[in-house]
Image (cartoon, rainbow, N blue to C red):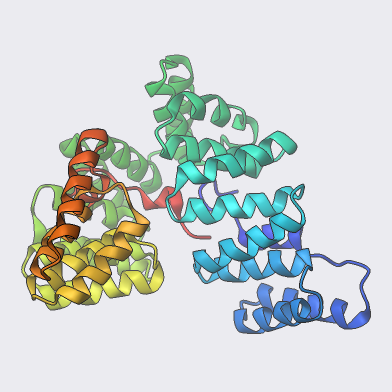
Length: 386
């Protein structure tokens, strides 16, 4: 069981409706299910759309079509189909679990929480729902809520290093030294000086801002297993934070070779190349990141900065509008939009963006700029795609 990567196929299986329908519908369900399990998403989509053509209110077809879009990381269409299914079957917890996963995969943890809470309320024995809810609380920095929820799954999850790492941090932040020690002792005992253990310890030090200890742990992990995913990613974050940009670039490239489908490497490569003045490479990396994860606000922001530098103001505005829709709380996006709008002669709109920027600066930390500058630790392993 992987704490951070619930399986969509397992969820799909729970949603697949093998209802007592006429044979053509049953045959289409069988075709769609088999296609989805072998990864043939176009065939699965055709089968479920054929069901909806014959029966527009078929709950299972909407739900499974939502899973098809989830597999494609097409979050808007996934949410639309799952919402349609939820309207038709509001009591079905599996649909709400997938709605929560759509938000979770986009990093919208505050929006994921109500969906997961509703599943836990209706199915308190659901291990997956409790894990996802606890992790969402943690990633939303609601540590007081995260700690008891994560502790509740200890009997089933205490052999998972990522779970123990998260639980130890949450317990430490909520004044539970007993639980923090329990999780830490179990983590070290289970890890047995492995590369994975050093990776987790390195991530913990990196999150705390202790770069020297993080470098020691991550370097040990890399020596023990240079092909361990996310070791080089975290080393890249560390070097980027230290402004050792060439070293950071080399580490992100190393991790992207191991994990070619992880968009965060390309997002970070775009940011590093932009800082190095390698704008053509930066643009290519941002586009690569967005091809894998269209909802990555920081890559749209990076493209907006590049287009502004090149005086491609309409293209810059389009990219920044996308970033703003994905991360409306980013003051830096509004500031850059104001500059672009002013360059386009749209002064009234520019003033409105500046006003919004000032309001956000007073209300909240600027998460997007922190990510781009490397001040805020990002751990995509906790939000890894299945």
